[in-house]
Length: 147
Length: 489
Image 1: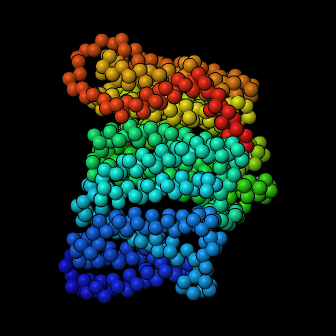
Image 2: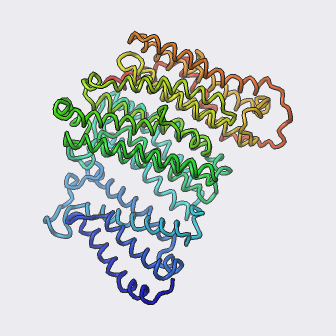
Image 3: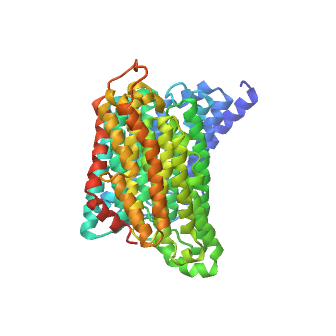
């Protein structure tokens, strides 16, 4: 697809979509949304980029190596944060009980580990959706999972 | 530390499953060792949990330190630990077999993704066994449904993909039923924790009887589809026969049973006993199980594909487990739950033995199996043990579970079901014995030209399972004690 209007508009819009996605992820504990919704929004910006330019350009921006690293990394990050709860003498995924400071309600850095968990989920969801998109569109030649 | 063990098993398997794709990129040789090591750890931890609840009794684990009704609760009782041991032991043996078998069955590039899905499946089944929370149960059910579809379609040929799409659609229907039932329960009780729901339901039954009845029906249908209870079994023969052999073994051996266990937990721990007087749900399950036992065997008789026959046989065998549920009250549930382990052993062994035959000769058709016992004595010996156990010959573990089912039917004064068990055992004999007789005494028409030697690593799990079938056939006491503790609701 080679359309000047679509290209220019998406070039303008992509950063804002990503910023909004990050906002939804980071404010997951304060406002509606969270890791899943925010990750999906971030991924949609990449999908828009891939569609309006071309798929090769899109997959160059976020290669399969990076996205599969992020996929696994996001989930492992979540599990590690969960295990910290056990390490600090409480149960898996413990927050206040593990002695994490909860901060002032309403502030960005409050809610203890929830912030970090949303981040992990956001990374995982975004990279998974991007991988799914490229697997379905056939723009990815490696991994063998698509044919 | 040991009190964190239940959640650590699930976390370990999840972590391993997410690590495998990374290892695939950087250290491909490590994917298999990581998979097997994590399953060995899970198995040892399950045994330790058995010891632990023997010492201090069943205990609960609150995720995040939040007590119910706010937090998710894991409940580690004998039933959960029994399932943990079944899942981790059979899962371990199957993947050891799969290490060599998968190399020729699926594309090398997706091999590590197969391990990922396999570990996810194990983690989700262990989660289903442990959880004490309705929504958490639903989440694990979904994970296991997706992972099961993945390990069916890993082979990437036309039949596998068709079968896995069929399975995906039907199991999504089942998940939908379960979700709707959870919503119904949540709507009237305001709780998701099993114990809190169980406490609220007797009162709610008077106020909202229809909601509870509908929820119960949806649970039975949802878990019935997933565990292939007779009229809802249509996805199973395709899925289990076309999948790679390790997938067939683990799907037939473990996955369909974990849903039956989830249903047992819900029926006898969550729903109030009065509901069985209000609607004859146990009789419905019993009725369907009778059909399952008969129809599964009759369908299996007319198959000429080895793995397809085994798949239909699974439908009959899951019928015994549901018969145990339906005959609740006597010793039948002991037989039904015992059959979970026994059938897991023998059916996964039979599927693995079938996989060995296909690996060595490429034969799938039953008619071509004549004289194969001379070429592959160990494999067909194990197959014979499994077949005897399916029929219920004394001295094999299958006999013990059928014996307790029959005793349970007599406890409830329903000798009709004893006749059904006998008749279906005869039917089992009709389709299993000709294979063995042909294999050992049949004269071969034309010798198999291609014959590959079977690696020892693939044969050993099959022989361990065969030894287990015989061992627990002669010495079922440890299992019986465990199961009897598991069903004391």
